[in-house]
Length: 191
Image 1 (tube, rainbow, N blue to C red):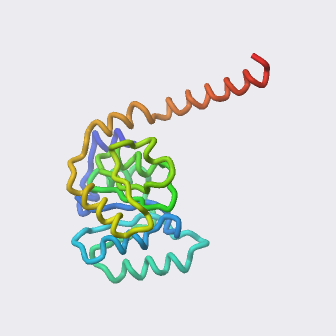
Image 2 (cartoon, one colour):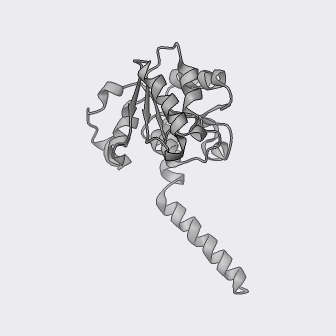
Image 3 (tube, helix red, strand yellow):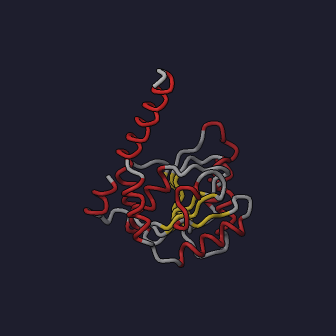
């Protein structure tokens, strides 16, 4: 789907060109309120995409109240994955200031579509993204804002797309999983 979105772009989401995007359920662990604090008073435009987490009604309500009070922030509850690629293609920076983050599909998909990414400095993100990502301290709205500023000002590095397309494919993941099973089975069987 990402390849198709790159090869056959549409203008459906062109209104979001050069926006910040944050994709993920509205949840305390995803830290959207700190992101909203980070961009408050700025000219950044932010698109939040994701359903409100069922166990986080109080947090979700706070996020929704902040969105209503700011014309530079919009919210989409859910869109089809192939359309999400079109959004990434026009947005400038994907921001995931989660309290703990694995290098999930959101960041990989955003990066392969040409977004610079701002992610948590917690978890294993640095192992995957190296010097290509902009790392923020999730406890600090100042740090989140500084990294957004840097990511927004930086040109996109095409070698990041190439790294993802060659190193993080489903085929490689399947091969590594199969090799892991084979090693484990070999040890169990005494080979």
